[in-house]
Length: 377
Image 1 (cartoon, helix red, strand yellow):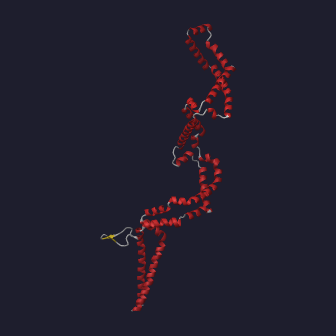
Image 2 (cartoon, one colour):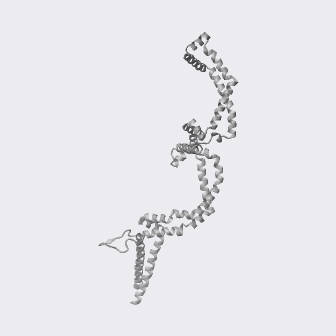
Image 3 (cartoon, one colour):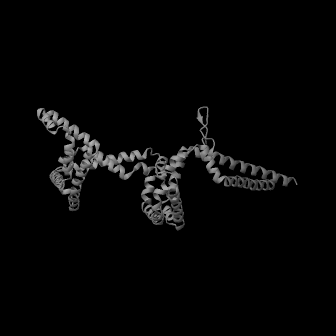
């Protein structure tokens, strides 16, 4: 009985030594975090193995990730998997549905992206673009006659419009001089004219007696503008001016009208055509509704092409990302406690089994030592 107790005691001692030794060895992988000193001398095995070799560990982890875990080949294989393509397609469709059904205005969408006053910025951009294009056009075409920019269709329309303009002038003139305002204006003009003529004006008024000059002149002025010859006169004058204008070159036309006036006119026309304020205040679902079906049909093709593009560029992309450096920098930035937590989170059970295995081996060795001691006695 005493021999059995001796063997059990030796086994317990061996198990304790084996378990504690393995547990201590595991702890020494991480602890202490920093070097310890005694009488100015560094105590051996401080700091622990991993704190001491953290930089090397970071480098090796970076290489392991790039060379064995996240490789270009593995990413290419993943990108080409039909299941992954379906996931990308669902994500694209969900994103499109959110965009095409949102009640947010275009301005609000730009605000969310951090682009404030997008409508004003767009308007300024359009104005600058128009001015740049105008200046470029003037530099290139300054000495080119205007008639070279006019097509036969435009010339024909101008020839058709000129008689209408002449008729319009005559009609407007008749309406104006028939009105009270026109009559007063004409009367004032006549009075000023007669006053400047002195005696001749007095003689004309004496000749007419009590009748007003305006009552005699107004009907004649109206007859003048109603006369066919007057219309033909205006038509000829306008036609002559139009012909002269066509012979002028671009720079002369600009000097005649004024660059500021031309640019202001272009800005106003562009502003009316684009209606930027109205555009940016409209909901996205109304703006994009006509394109939804087309984009929805194109989504699978776009996803497929995007996958092909990524696969063809994955090697270059991996080089540009420098994943090895990213992993190394991340590991180097971790505290030793964080690294210990990560490793134990993965291998805690295995470390416990190593401790138990040490205790088991220690116990077996203790039993062998106990039996061997009995035989020696």
